[in-house]
Length: 559
Image (cartoon, rainbow, N blue to C red; front, side):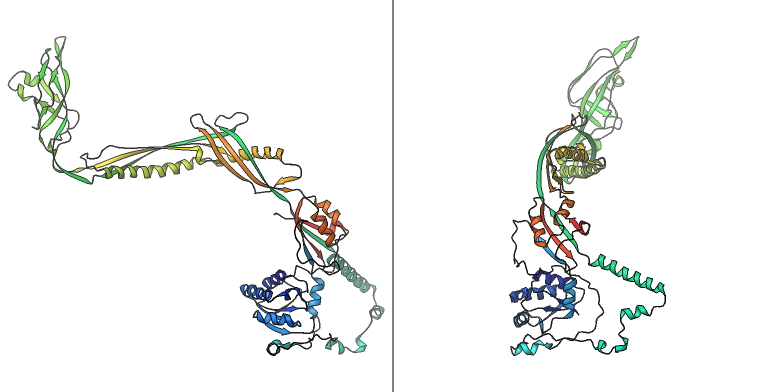
């Protein structure tokens, strides 16, 4: 268990902070008569709540009847005392004094008379252990029985406590320092003692000479400005250098046909018919029969005239013409590949071998019975498959092409995607294939180049009394116009950041040297470059800043 003593004017928040930051789970709080936290039972309720939240158990020791009743009402264990502990006096002596400094406009609550000692607002988490004789506390009694009878210990006089060990020291052992020195027989011992005394004096000067620490929050203001820049692949003197990035990607998606239909379709195609017979033209009427070498019968779909052959040096050079044909019967067996055709109508005449046909492309469309048919859903799925794959790949490859240090804005990026399929709805086919082509283009710029331009412009706008606060800048970009073909872009930039007033630390040291807390408050509060501050004197008995400014420390804090 640890005992924490508080002063009469100590704030509730300071008391709670000592409890929460204590390293001991059990804490006894010593409350003097008339302490500020005795104003209401709510203060003790807050202490109990915060202590339980921090895993601490708090009891209250006090000689103030009202404090005991409030603490018990809040659910705290209570003990009655009539003697202020030696430890409380000891800690109050060495505890640093600290107070907040606010500008004149800030309201100050709980003002105190000038002649009243300012209560310390800081405490040590780990207090040094001091070897001392045990202290006897008189008239300490458990509070539970007393509170039940509504009886309280009256305030009693403090009795003098003597150390039992001191009384046991024989008189002969009390030898004066002068007698000890007189009995020293060698001067080296005198030097050792003198050095030790000098070390003690130096240590005292270092640890107990007055010091002052002033923590200052400089005044800060919000700053906003707008700029416009031109970004170009081929920049001019005032332009921001840009870089174009472009990528094209193609994806394929194929889906099996899900529809079906009962059909009787005849195969169709084209046959080139040759005339190697004479220079005279030859007419073939519609439905003229053509037979392939494997016996498949086709008929012409139109009447055509085959040009006459050319005679050169007595040799016949055949002429030809393309003729559309259709199978004589429905069925897929007529979907034959390239073939040679004869004309049965010329059979038995010299023309039979001189007029012939050839196909260079397979016949198609022949079907009979139930066949697969392309549906609209098949086409959609094929296009989605092609689009999904290619878009993800294109975005990935595009991101990999962006150089380090360059910034890509969404408004400076253009994407075009086109998807086509080789089949249409109701086409008779086993599957449908779709091809999707993606093209991504963008104009990039180095954000560092923008920062250089902005800083140069802002430095002209800032006065000599302010400077930008580090890491406070926020930049928003918009793109009013973009021409990717020309590689140019207009860039609008909005800048928001904080600026802090510059504080002359050495000047403040000179101003507060030798000044009291109230005087320092007035000095800091009167300065337009400071938002707030906190001053701390060390050791606890010091009530003014030292005259030696080397013993004054000033810390600048961010807002």
